[in-house]
Image (cartoon, rainbow, N blue to C red):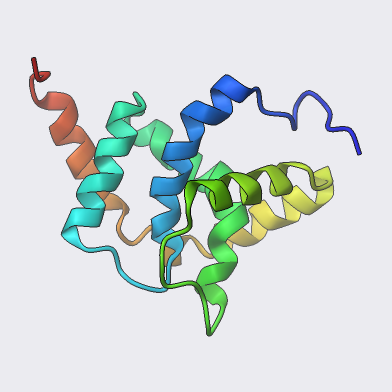
Length: 136
């Protein structure tokens, strides 16, 4: 099956998004992220040039429809996904029909309290990183 232009992701954009997706995917694990994980997630988002609003949009619209089911599973993943696995899962989701993607997005919205509980801590770290002077 050939993907339409709206579902294909160009290699440069995929390469830029993959670290962001991988970092945010940690919010869908069956374990609460520790302080070091929250720092790492915020630093990854900051390096990618995302502010809190943009990063939250990526979390909600790109990641949640793919990973929210892990939080609903009694035996969900406890260890972080590799970049290769995240990339494969994201591309597989993008290859699904528009209806299937819309249903997954709708279901993911209902699960927001499960994956956004750490968002205030990440947003605060992002704000602090944005306010700090760049390293030389």
